[in-house]
Image (cartoon, rainbow, N blue to C red; front, side):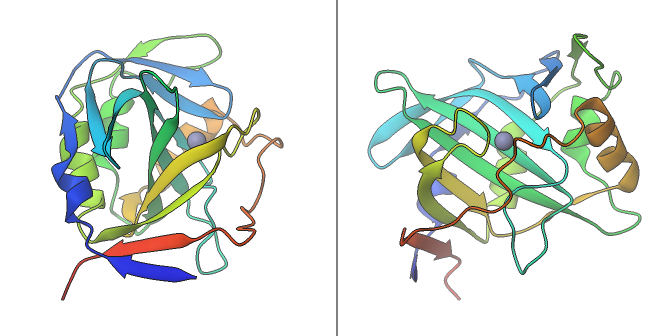
Length: 199
Ligand SMILES: [Zn+2]
């Protein structure tokens, strides 16, 4: 079931400051970037502070029967209720295109094991506003990895971004695909709302 509506409110409610030298680590199921204090988003009358963002390869949200090559999740938390809001962006491959944000995250190398690498200058607001400009899907679900917390607000950008083969290799070598992934999200009668650009 899908409903449509205006999407620009989400873009207007994104507030992030570009930052350099963020800590990049391997964390469970992906390459994680610590981003506390970098920004927040207002949604449904509440403020959610950015905590971190991470990249998985392959992506988790299946579309058109095939998963994307990589997926980015920007994890936000409500300071009081601790409710989680995730902005998700998917990446496909189209030679010779590559992802500027992944290059910046891995500008000083790919973390291995317990290593921490410092990122280049990351303009997360510009990246997210570009990815979400044409619309997004929204639903309430759970985290895709254990503990699979319920009640997570998901927003998945409509427009795919590009990633190169070597970037996918870097992401998947740092954090090999984890069998704890739930492969597909059953919707169980959940309402998925599609916000898109008005033509
Ligand atoms: Zn994730």
